[in-house]
Image (cartoon, rainbow, N blue to C red; front, top):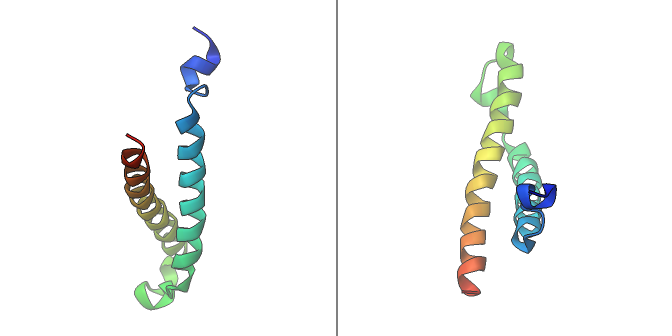
Length: 77
């Protein structure tokens, strides 16, 4: 088995999926910068606030990407 077949790099939808995931991750990360985590968490837990910010942005971007990819690929079927 060739390495490109194993990684599914020969599939054109793979590149579209990666671009969508990275784009929405960056958009979500910067959108969540508007939340003041100091009001939500105590000052002692600033490192946990950064972790929560990162995990929430990954989770939201994953859901948004799945939504848009579903719409995009169903339009071409």
